[in-house]
Length: 376
Ligand code: MRU
Image 1 (cartoon, rainbow, N blue to C red):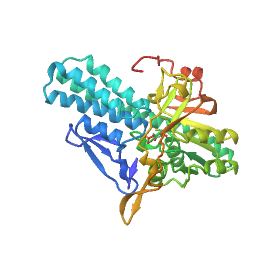
Image 2: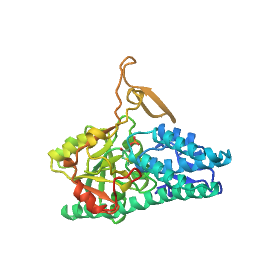
Image 3: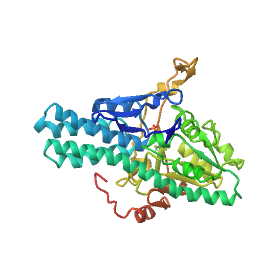
Image 4: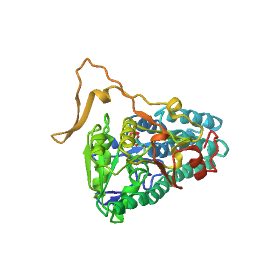
């Protein structure tokens, strides 16, 4: 997508330097656009853990490139027979950085499967390189397809409203910044806008890290999409007053029976949408399905992050990004990063293969080739 008119992805190999991965360091957005160089798997692990990069698809792509960097390090340090042990350790370190988004584990397992079955060092480097690029390219292609399928839903709503703007509410950032390109929840929005369909997006600010206010608002603005940032608690009120036509969110992990884990607060939006008969869609590439898990509530690990993310808030002051304390110094805080929306509250899933109901049978009909294996 475009930044000041120039097309970017969120992660790529540096021009002319195959040993350096470049990322957009999202901690500085929307106020500064910073590109960071990553040259080791340890740096990539830090970038994921400390959220220089974040969002399900991008975490997966970052893990893919992280394993590629690990392979280069192993070869440069001529670890010979220790290479596989080093790669496995690197995979463990990457997987431990963020527990909830399944894309991370999926990408590491995909790299390891190819790498451990290849014995010649140069071939291993080729496999790691190609797999990292494939994961990134597929992520972008799948999100583009999600846009094409999701477009039909928005188009129908637009016709039903006699070509009045369609009001769509979204939570957190499931935009191109959360993937390699296009985004999941935002892909249908970009597709609709590009087709001349009038839309307006309600952007939940998404405390504590404000991915909505900082990232979704920024990327929608870069693409010229009308939007309004709202407090996390405003959605229910807007729905009661007919100001929301549909909700579209992303997901960090969706079970094979359609339970959706997403940024904390998503469940409350789904409840409010259900109470107001407003369709609640979840957009996801197949890499965000956990084919082995059924019951999301009891099985999905929910990341708990540092309480200071709740106790403080970041913003721009006199042209400097500052962190300020919100709470009394002595008040502890709890920081649950995700929640689970049960499948019964999800109207439909929008995937790269089409749209389906959020239930096991419908998901299987769309993905009959996916069996529950450790690397699926
Ligand atoms: O903690 P984050 O920013 O990595 O959370 C992920 C998200 O951005 C959201 O939960 C998003 O809606 C799903 S990821 C595409």
